Image 1 (cartoon, rainbow, N blue to C red):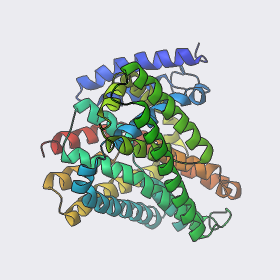
Image 2 (image 1 turned 180 degrees about the vertical axis):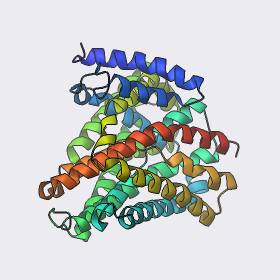
Image 3 (image 1 turned 90 degrees about the horizontal axis):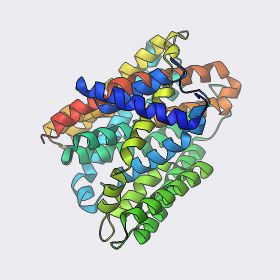
Length: 396
């Protein structure tokens, strides 16, 4: 039965329910239990969910990410952007630069990696995990300026990460054994991906606005919203656009249209709990505890994780000081930036399928393993840190 998708979904949901309640009993976020359930039931441990199922269950991941992105985008009302836009841009830029520099310098000066490889890993380190953020915000029912800042930074972080990674991969490609790409070409490719993603999201948002008017019933909103989000995810996959950026743009279009988007988001909240549980459990299935024991990965991973945490936390703190943000934002917002998942894995796998891997497959495998180790640790330790930050920061 472990090879059947329907069994995989069923056992992951039941495991998520059980370990989610256990996590709550220890005052941990439910998603920590969901991730642990996937890791325990997955191929790396008990094997009750077959390794081949990860690909077959990918549709759940894609649809859930689209829903998460739509919810983040729905928080970008014009009024909030006028109030938080400048601070969010400043904090995002500073923490991206701080994280990149912290990881590059730590990996290079510790002698663990050469400068090109350190820069590639540092560009991957800038990515965060919007899914964990949204799940914890929803669980705590948190609102207010702290959440507005967090949503804004997580959204911009994805776009900034794409640009940094594109430039670094181009500049280091030759040194790492891959084909050399001009920095200008890499920047243009990154910008095209961002602009194309946003354009796709605007089109989907306008379609949702047209199909989910005031007179639409809840069942009609379910059908049309999920239908368009699935189409959006498919188009993004084929074109190489970011479904996260597209979903955020769609949510922003909705929330700034007459009538707003709250009805669409509220309707989706009725079906999202099992989607979230399955999403994080599937992510847990992909975490392999065995990566801890692959040559040199443990030491490299620890340096990577610590340097990334320092860069994220103090980068946010410094950026918030420059922006004149509230002391609670300066003190706690950086802790909510620690979770790391899909975007980082996607960038690492891109390296594995790029000319760099063809010229130096061992180096590409090391980058993937270090990234997976970081995701493994940050997906377990990051959500409790985010929950603590949201509880403290929500007092703002």
